[in-house]
Amino acid sequence: MHEIELRPEEFALFRKYIYEKVGISLSDQKSTLVKGRLNKRLNHLGLKSFRDYYDYLVSDLSGEELSFFVSAISTNVTSFFREGAQWKWLESYLPALVASKREKKLRIWSAGCSSGEEPYTILMFLQHHLSDFEKWDIKILATDISSKVLTHAMQGAYEPKAVEGLSKEIIARSFEAKKTEEGRYQIRASLKEKILFRKYNLVTDPFFFKNSFDMIFCRNVMIYFDEATRFDLIGRFITLLPKGAPLFLGSSESLTTHRESLKLLGSSIYQRL
Picture 1 (cartoon, rainbow, N blue to C red):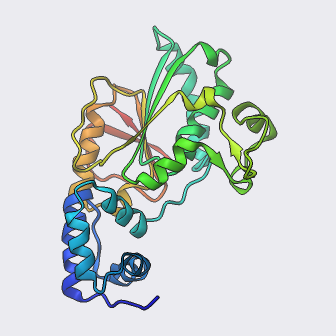
Picture 2 (tube, rainbow, N blue to C red):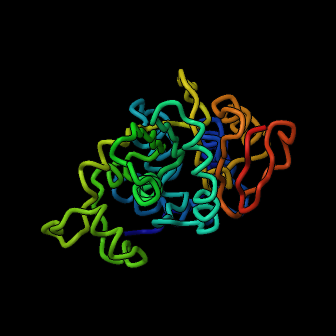
């Protein structure tokens, strides 16, 4: 594999394109990252320059190459029960949410679900804290822009290292008794069927939702967005949250806008006013 140089004018093309398509704001310092992470792709495709790759990217109407590009330049790091303080808060909030329900129905959005640990964690949490879990109509919308991580999420099979932090009780309840032939832990089908995985662009795809959500998770997604993009996205989230419902962000994310509609409760948890 030979190294291909990324010229400033080429980087400018990628920066403009990725911002318009998915809202990711690339600083000048990200030029080295883009070059390093995409060189292998260019060699694989037999392309001689980043301009050739740019032309290849914009001409792909399927959106699959855009998905690959986004996965390459972003970091898909996640784990089960990430952001421990948020789950502790949710444990204290859940009884009031349950008491407010006329029907045993919960609707939750995991926006930027990556390889699936987040939506599966939500179900593991509810399974543990709802004594009548099986009687509840629970649906989780799990979306991501990357086809690669969605494929992993839909499979629901995880390496032993990924489940090291889970208790034996959770593993026994949430995973199949037998591992896969590759030695992975397989999420039970009864949990997988409660999740609707969809490829979705938070910035450019329309909000087609007819009903609101009881809670929304959008963690470590907006770190790639500029202030204007974050403002618009949070505004759209607000329209989908009823009064009192929580919005969970990543621990490194905070809001300086929409204070008239959202109240900070701590640990990057915001409540709809």
